[in-house]
Length: 120
Image (cartoon, rainbow, N blue to C red; front, side, top):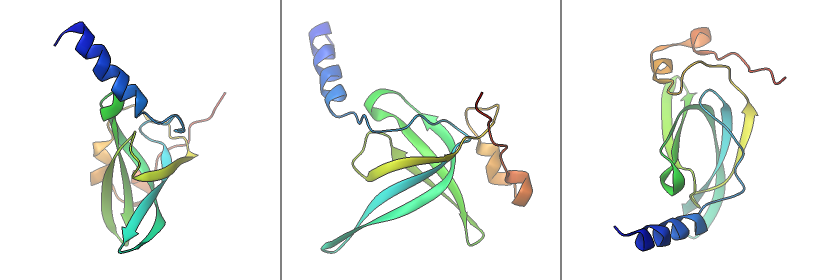
């Protein structure tokens, strides 16, 4: 790929990036306001959970949110720069030492609790 084509691709990618997103990382608890279309009606559904990973860069960046619903662990992966969701709210900032929190899948109850990060 030539330099000219690469800059054109980067320009297209930057045009479709969202600028209304808060800064968050693995360990943070977030509320993702997801647009759900059922027939002719559209509504907003809130998916709240812990960010267990942020993956990729640029327009292809994704993040995975995990929550426990009625005793069953549910994980959902969202493209970061996507019109699928209306907004993201950061509820709490988590204090973790890993970038990928896959170990939370094996923990139950209080063991799966993440300490809150204190902002200085």
